[in-house]
Image 1 (cartoon, rainbow, N blue to C red):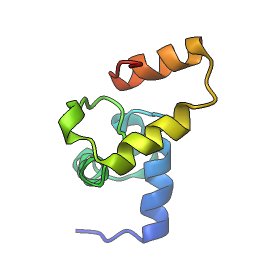
Image 2 (image 1 turned 180 degrees about the vertical axis):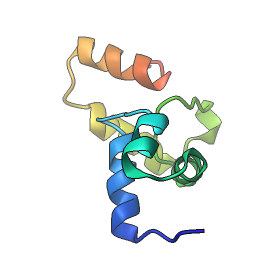
Image 3 (image 1 turned 90 degrees about the vertical axis):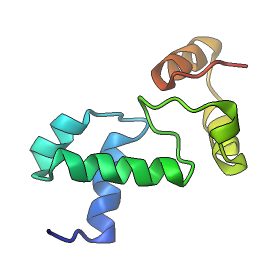
Image 4 (image 1 turned 60 degrees about the vertical axis):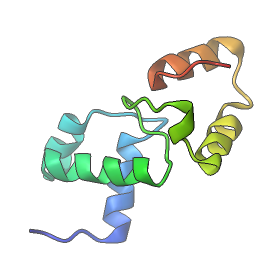
Length: 94
């Protein structure tokens, strides 16, 4: 099983997470990394409280840091942009 450097992993995750939100399949093909590895990396991000596209959490599952990160990330968005962001993430603006 290949080992990936922290820098490479961060660069690949950057493509999968906001604002890029590319699909796992397209990034896996482009980078030559298995889908399973990328899904594992996304799971690790979720466990750390990072908002990951395509995964909905109940309010109880979000850490305080993750909630704050989303509030800061969306603070400057217009109402239309906030709506699009929430739809993308499966969240409610409230």
